Image 1 (cartoon, rainbow, N blue to C red):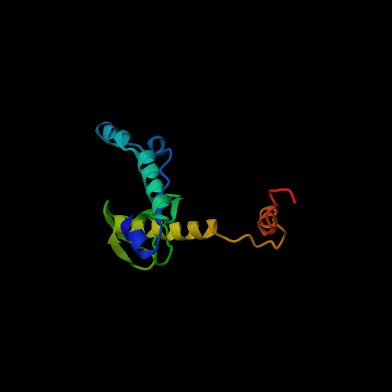
Image 2 (cartoon, rainbow, N blue to C red):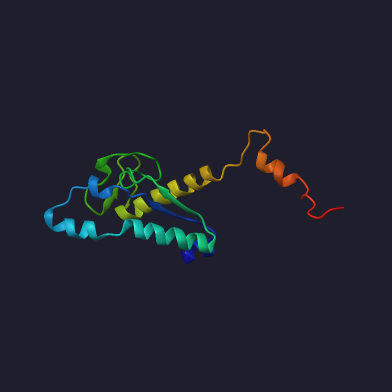
Length: 141
């Protein structure tokens, strides 16, 4: 959070809503999986981002660890091992978590830009009209 505030950037997290129903886990892994407080982490992070005045966006987690951030090639084969990423398209290699984090950051930037698009229809806006009117006088003349 401090790094985002210092650099004027935002925070992007994967939207993990419904992950417990999507992920298959072995019996011994279920306790760990079900004890994660995703919603609480998102709530705290959103609160702290708003308090610091920095951008916060949730992004679609689909294929973040299978997509190459350089060429955009998506394949399960890009993940030859659990922690390893090697793009079959361009050859980019690195730690799978680092590659996924880059993809989440890219999606976060795109998501924040889409949210902050100006209203560009050129049509009058009731809010804009109200803001441009002078305030009504309160007292009698």
